[in-house]
Length: 491
Image (cartoon, rainbow, N blue to C red; front, side, top):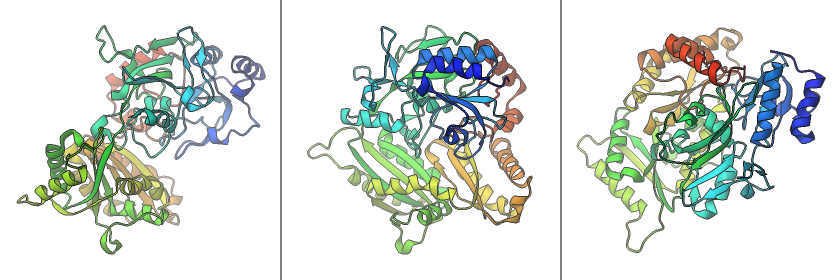
């Protein structure tokens, strides 16, 4: 790693212009501090405005041995997008990477989100720059009757979503970013700043390796995504939601299977929320409406949503009516997996679900895990942790919630900020190691469901990835993007 010089900064400024380079002494705080882990010190922040400029920046820095850390919206939770503390790494920001190249090679990047996106209704797709925010994309699509269906609590940029293969709360219906990415344009970490175009937008193409998938979920280590072609879905025109209280934890999977059988593709979401997570949300956002009698929170609650993409037809059964009938049928089951149900306004129920993440952040010192399991093991893991965690780590609150429908779980542990164990530098690492060991070794799950790899879980990648797989990854990295980029190591 080479420390950038004045000459290097001048050369980068020649590429990106005055607006494209931030130097030490300017306000770099927002680029140096991650949401949760990994604050560092940036040598500079370079902000190219096109894929072509990104290529030139990459070529220059790789040729000089300058390490760049790709940074999209900096909303990640595993410390993958911020520089280290040496002050020698530069941040490659997607802030201005919001345009798309036209057929003549120029870049369309007119001010205003609506001018940054190319919509193809016939192909049901959009072409976007990697720096476009999810909210801007969906604000552009909504009047046209479409949506990019990755539902998140944060507002990331598209490049980061691709680099981490984001899932979200409606994965059950729409899948993750990988399933909704039709093409990418990438710049490799080599001394040529090689630009590769896989932007055909085809939904079927079996003429060899489907190269775009190498750059989805690999955190930018194999190349930086600068543009993308995304699949979009019809915007739902009808929806209904309910909060379900299962008879017990064993009944959760039965409820999921029953809902899938009776509602099929109209089932959009099946989310789980623990009492501790909901309590943290209500404490942090007093304006949230508590729908439970007397305000008493059940131990575990399921948020289910049904949706349709067409407008209500005359004489058609409403989704509220369908949901009531389905729940009545489930209640008639001999084993009665359902204890209680509350049908209400979808926006109010989703307000509670989306407040959970912010709520648990304020519940104490947060130790967070983004893990996944086969669907049948998620509740078994929760039951195991409820019994064993207090024995090994007393007074650590489990504030979990997650995507029961796809086996994903945000397993959050809150520790009182005045807990003396926080003064022991081994306490949190020991806690993290034990939880991940249970996830991977006992339940054969993943230590990173949808946040990819970063500083906070690099050691788990080294420990739980087979040596041969690491060798193959290192070989692929050396072949495709041989220079150092980012903070993640796959080899």
